[in-house]
Image (tube, rainbow over all chains, first blue to last red):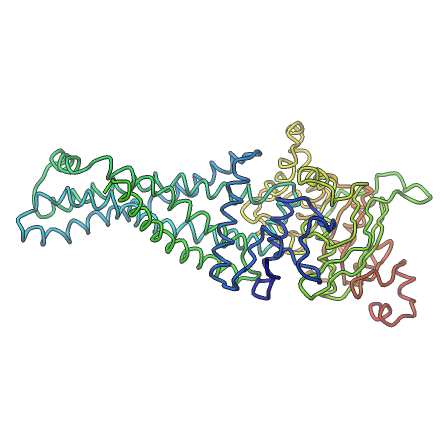
Length: 306
Length: 260
């Protein structure tokens, strides 16, 4: 049996949920037949079946369920017309192009530091010739995707949380709804798609810059040619190293966009709500990136790619 | 010195006799948990008429206006806008209906990442008015002239004063030539002079375009200046209604308190 809503459902979210029902169902739920009769008093919208009702009175489970429903709504609404192509391209520009400097610098430092740190240990074993292979595998399989995703989460996740949060607080999302625009499609679907598509490209870029930085790092203490360096890396790599690492970045990008938009879209009223949305967008999406990474490692292992 | 507006009464005077009802609210109820905000609220709005809903802060005025525009759903009751029961509309039909409804938010809700021009173009482009693309420029110019702010077209909302932002928000509402405009506390947070200017602008819009206006307010100067009829929202229902003068002389102290 479903439980009646409790006070743990935050009232500030009801209006946002209400808006979501206005989209997914028909407006004006005056028809009593559409509403499940669960208790004697009128139920708030949060008690409808598709709302994130905290069945087990746990804020963590309620939040997880709400995020899952938000993701479900993305797939339901994202692939139906009307398609916001123009806004999607603009978001790709914002999310991808404007992140290039930060991702580039991070990738460069990552490759350089990794090389400089590993060199003394490798030298002890007389294995300096293995540095390019080792650094190449480390960057492409793990460090490139995870560091880029974390930096991306800090830059893009927080800005999405803050932007959508302030739009919610200042009623701009309601104004969009009133203008005949589905704000979920216009704001959320475009941003989540943009992060999902752009993070893999940024990761490839960070990998390439990181590897070049590794070449620079080797040449600070020794001498190698770019051709030899590249040859060493490629000889140690297989598609089983590259492809799973590439594909998991789509999921990282999806997580950053989804959590950033979720936190902003359902931000609490007031400036504190905007700050909390930006902050929790980064915290939750960073955590989710690590969880997804762990899952990706396990799945690729089960599939025999490790 | 108030900005020069381009709003002169050009429409023919309203016909005598009862005007067409454009908005009907019947027995609305709305609750948030145990907080019963609206309880059996009913009211009509006629074409070309300004109705002000008066009520204390927290009495449910904003909830009422958001129910009409479809941002909230009433628990029970019926809302009929321009002959259409909004509970029967899917979201596409609701979007089409919203093109005939304007909503001026209390916070203005201007898109702060867009210029004034882009703010005004947004509703035009979203309402599938592509066949009118050639007219976009003229419509934006006209709407800005209507509110006396044609020189702000390339400014960002953050560069405007509170009164200017309110006018731009009104211009964004007017650009689709709505038949009904819903004003959510249009003078709240403005100085008395700007509030008077906005009040007279509301009147000018009514006269020029013969729009019906549903105004939520608790600013008595604004109520006096803009209302053809006043309804008092108390205890979640329409407690009293009449002209400003009638309610000002009302014997009931709950009504009379507002007019002291």
